[in-house]
Length: 207
Image 1 (cartoon, helix red, strand yellow):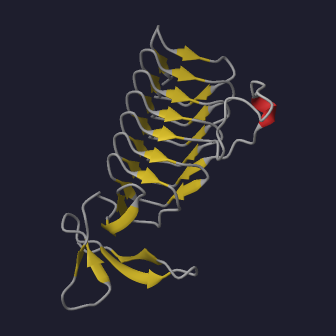
Image 2 (cartoon, rainbow, N blue to C red):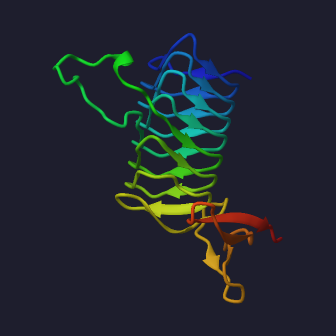
């Protein structure tokens, strides 16, 4: 098995593409980017220089992933999503001179295993989106997202929890702080994080 690159796509020769990865029309993969196996880079998507992408990642049409982003295995990036890399964006310096690559420090977005970014959402670097979390369409993420969290709004805030199947979890009436996936029966427990926020940890899977 090998990768597939459509004729109108631009993939730098130094980029690495895993087996079964497809880069669709008008997409651009910059130098030294590394994509794992089974990835899909949609039409018009952009993968910045040195970006690291795991296996089975989907970048939908016109998604923009700027370096030095890291996307772990199984991440979903919806249409027109933007992962930024500049905390203080300016075209020129205080003297009016055009800024070049060495005039600013790039910071990245880290998207952990299985997380999903909804259409037209924006992740403002530096930020981490936790494992199996879900960012709603149009949300603007300005701070770290816990594992399994469902976040929405501008700025994005947690509005619930989701399981690995993507369904919103429901709290069990007989067990406070225990959540269940209506699709798979997996159970999750809500526990305090070290920073005083809330996070979820998978405790068991039910048949």
